[in-house]
Length: 263
Image 1: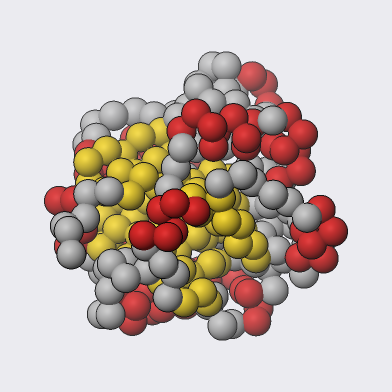
Image 2: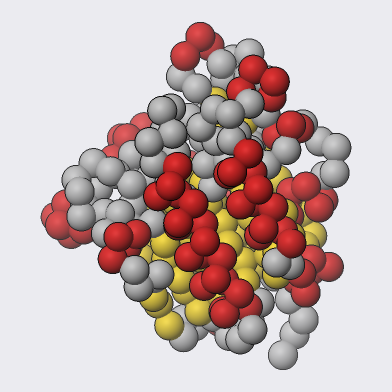
């Protein structure tokens, strides 16, 4: 069994100061936790000398301070039984400079923790995001031939109308452009399963809310954080959840539980 969680923390230092990351680890006890938008460089991370009791921390901070970045926490007891075979990234400097992807290879699967670019309100980074989508999809297809994948993180797109509270008002907006939605569909057509939608076909639940106008209190949100898994893992999914009542960030943590065959 693997209990895997993901959370865009919108600033690692902020959730540490609030005690919310420690709370999540203590209450949920994930085997693996992927974090996105840690907003701290590798140099600053090194200076903090962060220690999470019972967990191993792997980081991929952006070169630009206070921006982007990813991190993974792995429970040491789980890691002992499921040792890491390799750690890598996308090996494309224009994306790796922003710390957008961590690739962890275990015996039974690859785990990818990703922070997809935001296309921005003026869609000024839409081309950059589409290039990232294209590169990462090609990368996933190659990896999937070797071992099944679990890819999680903030994809910065609501795929279908059910995935945001106000689809009509947001058509063409960042995160709900036709281009971004079609790119996400390409992941699905390539054989990757949206685990939450697979388990909950009609459930309306969100993972991100604007800080404006009491959006979270009114539940005017978007589902933009996902767990995608290789098709051959879909029958191993035991649970796919969104913890939308857990506070500390403008995003909610998400979880997937998978039961792997022994051996």
